[in-house]
Length: 216
Image (cartoon, rainbow, N blue to C red; front, side):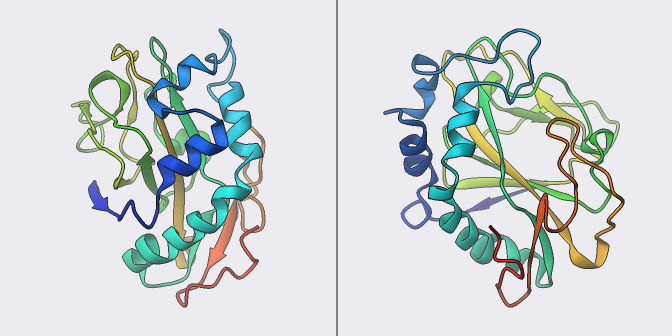
């Protein structure tokens, strides 16, 4: 696992996400939006719908962030998640409701995850990750806006506890696969059923910083 930093003045994701959601304070998102109903997907809140519906307002900043802060970590052509996954850890709830490996959800080996909170992420409202495969020694990843985490979620089990902080944690995450390791297997995401391939779930970002398919 590695923690990276980025300049908030240039990439003010918290302000843009708050504007997309129509909330004054992201850590009080629970004052505006209700959590998903019992038994529903953790992606089933109206806050998630608002984020995905309004993602076009975030796309240009997301693309520039990938060019400036993710592509240099690889220095080669990479497959990048076209639209990042939005997460909301409502008070009393969990942003993702189980500890898991992404490989259990059809994501291939060689996939690298990047997790970027747009609120302060701490204690029971943050993500917990084991330090080594099968170690089970979960520790909280305490981050704040201006930081993001890089880790291999296909081999490191991770998840959330019940959020007892009284503050909503809002974050998004995305996956990257070096093109040389990309293996189109015809598999789909387990929630939305999206094909885990270039042109669907992934876009191709070349080593020169160009989205081969426009990244739309």
